[in-house]
Image (cartoon, rainbow, N blue to C red; front, side, top):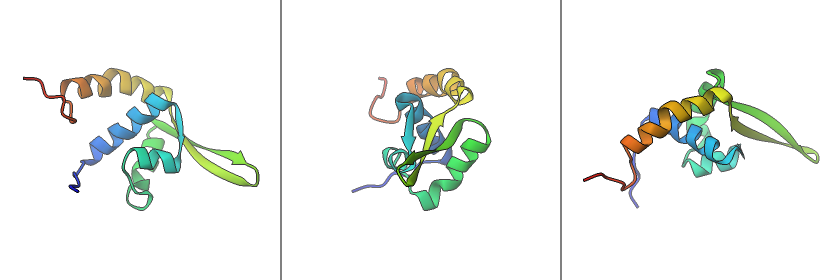
Length: 98
């Protein structure tokens, strides 16, 4: 199995695009879908939250609390105006234009 290195900008892009696509995800699913590790990548989530692109909230499940994330309106606009056109223009996954 080959592991691909992703620049931090692509990690941020993947997080915003995934949340834009699905709405909201708990922390575990978000990290799993994006191929991230909480220890190594928590600071990226915190940075996106601090800059207003995503928001973190707690959802109560009985006596437990689950951390969830969703994209903000700022993140949605950024995705629509910048990330989606960028992904179309420069695809990473086998969508090469001849």
